[in-house]
Amino acid sequence: MRAAIALADKEGLEALTMRKLAQGLGVEAMSLYHHVSNKEAILNEMVDWIFGEFRLPTTEEPWKETLRARAISAHDVLVSHPWAIHVIETRRDPGPLTLQHHEAVLACLRHGGFSVPLTAHAYALLDSHIYGFVMQEMTLPFRTYEEVEELAEHILAQMPEELFPSFTELTREYILKPGYAYANEFAFGLDLILDGLERAKESEQMT
Image 1 (cartoon, rainbow, N blue to C red):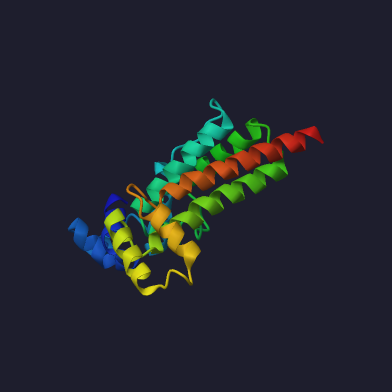
Image 2 (spheres, rainbow, N blue to C red):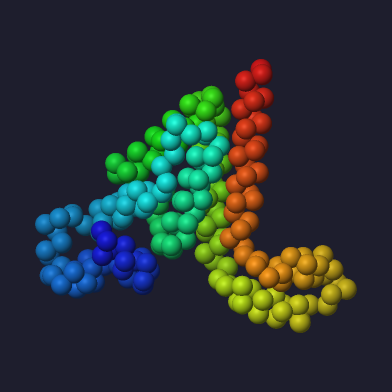
């Protein structure tokens, strides 16, 4: 699994074949079939491995704090394994680490006072933010601040400021400020979601 993940991290999921994986391990491709039935089985195990890297929430901590840490951990893990976001929710046979993670998140919400329906809403909302943000982040045409600066200046040079004053203002007053990183928007959105869930829970408990 370590070899398969390393190959996917380096060359992309399309490069992961039984033959290429075997070459990296220094064995014949047929040798792999003594351990896994096919590539789908490898993908299942890889996804389970990824879930094992996520920070596991606990009922011993306040739900808001532990789920915030879990979301940030999941974001960081998924960014470090760019292929994972495309397959993580497609598996029909979740492994033990995957199920353990789901159970921990659900238990945390229920222990924190969420009803069953609100637990379902919270889980979907949090994962939508995590996966959706990572997908957007991974497709942006920049990674470093220098690349952001270069792209922003390129766009501004072609864009009449009088026609796009709001875009120009945002770019100059926020995006081009030192230290800007799109990834920082993840925590801002996450906190809004967690605050909203807290209010929803309190409102539900009052009815």
